[in-house]
Length: 223
Image 1 (cartoon, rainbow, N blue to C red):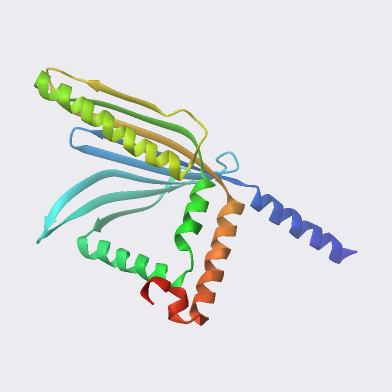
Image 2: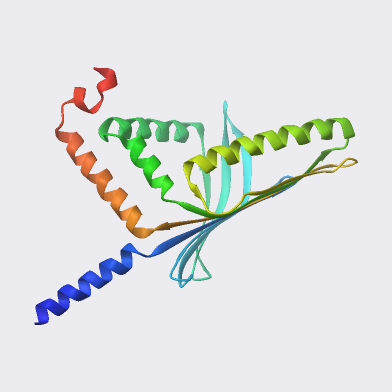
């Protein structure tokens, strides 16, 4: 009898984990030369949450390649847990690219797997508002049309990657007599933890299977 109780408890816990939605909130703001990025992961009505804040980002020259220097603060339950300064160089970007290419070789159908996972993501809020001006009316008018076009392309691509559950709210407000740039992006995403676990298990299974397959089977394009 006790064994059945433990089995039922384990099944209930697994069921709760599978149906738990994970909320992802992204907020980016640029005012003049200042950038601010906030990413929050939360579950169970924000009882469990972790926040990553980048209050400052600068692009600096380091030799031939520019690097992105960002100050990051990690919050857990509203308290600062970690504060660090991270830099992203061209060498690191190349290392990530090589790692991605190696993963493509080892994992069969990685791209369809990632595409299917992205489609499981629900976007419940998408807002992108911009105020901009160059100080010249003719340049500002032309640039406003270009910005509208760029936004339309980005939002259209994003809507094909995830499942939109809200109408995107976009705006571009020209400032005719002043040189100014202010943009703000708010995105709310939601995905069930069960979908993440399922995709992770499929990824691990395909990685392990890829170790035992001949190279011509794992990378037919190179055969």
